[in-house]
Each structure stands twice: as C-alpha cells, then as structure tokens.
Amino acid sequence: MVPLQEGRDLMPRTLEGQITMEKTPSYFVTKEAPARISSMSKGTKLIVVVRDPVTRAISDYTQTLSKKPDIPTFESLTFKNRTTGLIDTSWSAIQIGIYAKHLENWLLYFPIGQILFVSGERLISDPAGELGRVQDFLGLKRIITDKHFYFNKTKGFPCLKKAEGSSKPHCLGKTKGRTHPDIDQEVVQRLRDFYRPFNMKFYQMTGQDFGWD
Image 1 (cartoon, rainbow, N blue to C red):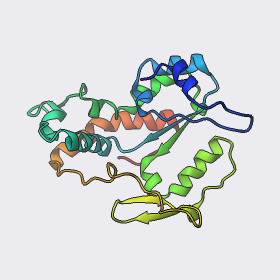
Image 2 (cartoon, one colour):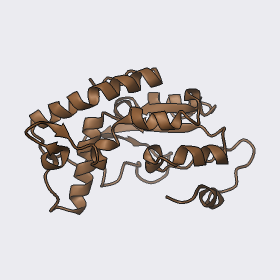
Image 3 (cartoon, one colour):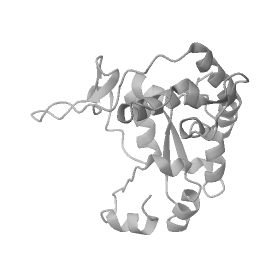
Image 4 (cartoon, rainbow, N blue to C red):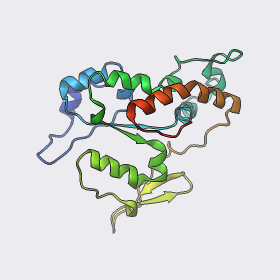
C-alpha cells in the first residue's frame, strides 16, 4: 500500500469544483488505513462496494486459481476442520467478507454519513440507480443514467456506452465475469450460516439490507 502522503502527491491537483478520487480495495480491510486517511483529510468521503460475501469468496478463489492452477480446492481452504465445519477465518478470501468487523474500525474515525455503501448486486441489475446514489453522495448532478448502459449477456455485466462517434463500448476486462468453479452446496450453505450473523450486524450498522440471506 502506498503511504498516504506519497499517494496524495501522486494525484493531480484538485481545482475548485473538481473531485479527486482514488480506488484501492485493500484500504477497507487494512487496519491502519482509517487513521491514516483521517489524519490526511477528515472530510474525505468514502465509497465501499460490497457483494454477497459467499459469492465474493468464491470469486476471490477463482481469481487466484486463474493465476495458480495448482492451489488446493476451495473446500479444503474454507475449513480448518471439515468434519466439525470450523471455518478458517485466517484465509483472506473468507476474512475480507466479514464486513461488520472491518467497518467497526472505520467508524472509529469517520461518521457513518461519510460512507456510502454500494451494492455489487445492484450495480449489475441497476447500474444507473446505484451510480445515481454515488452522484448524489458526491454532490454531483445526475448525468449518468440508464441510457449510458447496456447488458452484455456474454460477460454477465452491464457495459458503459461510449459517446457518439467514439470507439467501442467499455466493458469490464477479461479478468471479470469468469465462470466460477462448482462448489459443494454443503460448503456454500455452511458459509452462508457462518456469515449470517455478521451480515445482520452489517445491515444494522449501515441501515441497509443487502438481501444476502
């Protein structure tokens, strides 16, 4: 992770009326990040995109599998003990999805009103609606609407249309939309049971029901 002051120096200077954005997914789960960002700018607005933690874990594994085909199975990495069903929370693919735990750390430094939680599922089903919430949160005019998207059935994601006369529409890269491996449904159910209380706490903390249960 780039030190925040160095990261700030790498960003373009922000003029009046402009917003500078920086995207680093690891910040949300990095223990030191909230304090460091707060010390840099307490007024920073934070946007967190979350999805069903079970799906997120399988997607995480799929990404790793594409780079390291010889890694152990998802099932063997999920459990400390398969017989007892004890989940291995030290595995990052599992640990990242305990959103309530990570959010507690951020709320020590930022009020909940300064954080927008975006649903990964709704970004797919209603991209304009979720981006409308983002634009409102940032105090921007709603310029991005339904007319800017079309659904790509091959990838299973919406794609952003380009302006008239420009090149092809912009879709997510080849690393997105990969087919997930078949996972034993008993393992999926055990993971759902594991995450359920953490999800319920996350819903309460954010005031949003993401519908993962």
